[in-house]
Length: 237
Ligand SMILES: [Zn+2]
Image 1: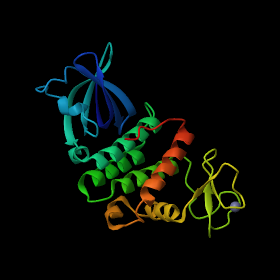
Image 2: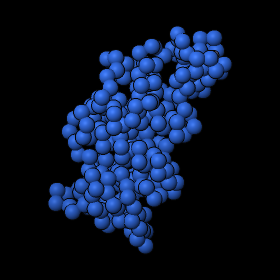
Image 3: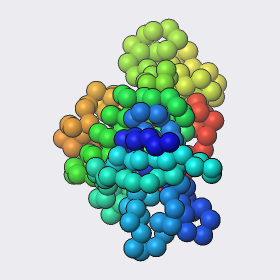
Image 4: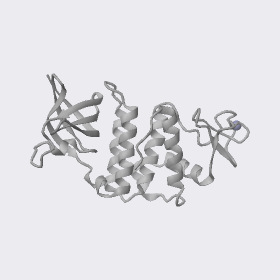
């Protein structure tokens, strides 16, 4: 049986001597695992189809060992993401997040479209790559029911004026009065960075400038929050 899916490679690892096992995030079926036979050689016809970030029309054929990629028509390789360490590290973070939250046989069209937007900006726009991964994570929390409360306290509903805190146990952002003992403080610059990123479209990310260093601090906070929410350690490069 043959099936055709529009998909992005989100994980790729060696399998036996000459093969690769890839994980695809597909538009039609969510997460799909497939094998690529004999693609490690320099002349292999489908060697491009095992690369991280490769977006294409994949043809999968069912076999005894699982699905095998029998053909792939590339749409965009997002090759530029791999040409710069910072871009690659943030792109790889996005793929790792996807590998955690996307399920087998469960479509998520909105997330698929957002992923393509993020990868496109990362590859082709002059933008701080951390802004892209942060924007992506903020969207993930919202899409999966953990929307960050950036304007008002999760508990009392009071607007944030001075200080605000993130409770890693619950993912809630609260005011000083409502914080739990183990909450960590979100600095003014990180709070501002998150608010700006949450309301700026991907297409406009190249036009904003956040306080230097706040993007890395914000990312550290969101990665911690993600790891707690999804009980998974992310690969940080
Ligand atoms: Zn409160």
